[in-house]
Length: 343
Ligand code: TXA
Ligand code: MG
Image 1 (cartoon, helix red, strand yellow):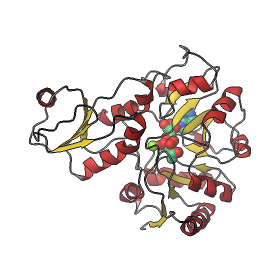
Image 2 (cartoon, rainbow, N blue to C red; image 1 turned 180 degrees about the horizontal axis):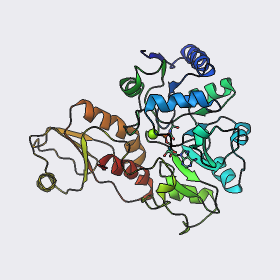
Image 3 (cartoon, rainbow, N blue to C red; image 1 turned 90 degrees about the horizontal axis):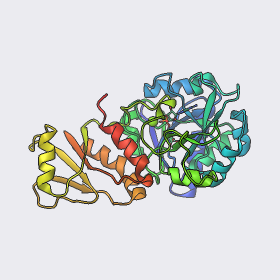
Image 4 (tube, rainbow, N blue to C red; image 1 turned 180 degrees about the vertical axis):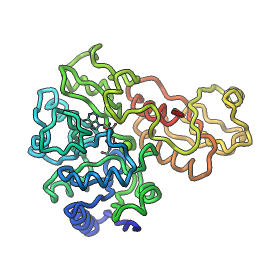
């Protein structure tokens, strides 16, 4: 099978792509679709056989549950058994958008979606194409990121085509994703929000929207460090990986950068791709230096594209300049740390 790639940049193309995607989804197929975070691999969330296809295509382990995408409050209530005030506050502030809420599950949600657990992760995406197909289908869409399991998430249709092009019938090309990293996943089954996967909605924004002035100690994981994140079954240390080895380093000048590289066993004649945002090596000692803006939103938007590009350029090493340690960067730091992990 070789995926058809269809564009959506004019109203006519958009409508035709909606028709084609909805037709495939109604038949129980999987379709790669753009969302504002990363590309998703979508299927009818209420059809266990369609969702099983997602797992097969990705090579995803059955213990990792998938996110259910909705486009109305009625659809939320078809999937969630409860709608606590905390969920209402966060949904009002951030939906539609890059926020996933973990809620008690209704029995109508198939086991394969929740990995047999008693909660379901729900997101109302902002992307107009996602909203259009969910509304036309009339059923929610299960959609993990459209990559092979444990590989880097795609932020362009070309990224999807390279990993999954021979396994799925249709890829909808919506251009570059706006947010660039996966949604913030928040468990709202307790008294306080618990961040299971940090993203571009920072802990500060989450707690402000929850009506809390400070981050309660019991909300483990909310500061973006790894404690507490294991409550989300998919959050293994190694994840989101490029093929090349990835190092996160700090340096003040190029001599210090060279020393750091040697210390990590990197030979200077290796293909070393440097991604800098603050201290930019400019002497020409390093052949491949790329700059990502020193701005969390722009950095997130560009990061996966840069990592994909480094892999395509045959990188032995990707060296990323360490990020600021402030809340708006935590989601990005989380992905980079996982990309750097070897196990
Ligand atoms: O931005 C996103 O969230 C993208 C787009 C396509 O929407 N989707 C995405 O899906 O990143 P995926 O499958 O790659 O990551 C879903 C994460 C995993 O870490 C999974 O373990 C967690 O959400 N998750 C799903 N259901 C859960 C549940 N019931 N309880 C806790 N964590 C859950
Ligand atoms: Mg993923």
